[in-house]
Length: 118
Image 1 (cartoon, helix red, strand yellow):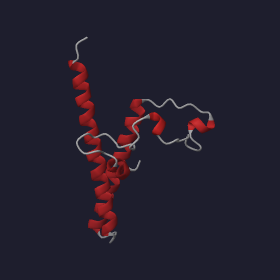
Image 2 (image 1 turned 90 degrees about the horizontal axis):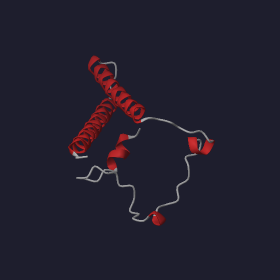
Image 3 (image 1 turned 30 degrees about the vertical axis):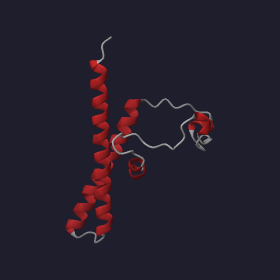
């Protein structure tokens, strides 16, 4: 997952990605299925929300572990590539901040739903 492009699509103050300026469905661009994806090959995907969240959290964890390892390698003198270390640390930082923002939005949504009267 490319967190940089995901975060760049966030509208300040709303945390809603800007998916384009189309207002009506007939103005939206005609986008077909992803080549080689489930719709193109006839397969159906039954990915649950839990599996999606688990995958995203594993990806964030991998970025943090890689960042930590790059920092340790730099501190031990195993690498001199400071740019790679800084990039790795910033990617992990962005991924963690994005994850925490999503967590807060989910908690806010849950809280709002729990306050609804039936």
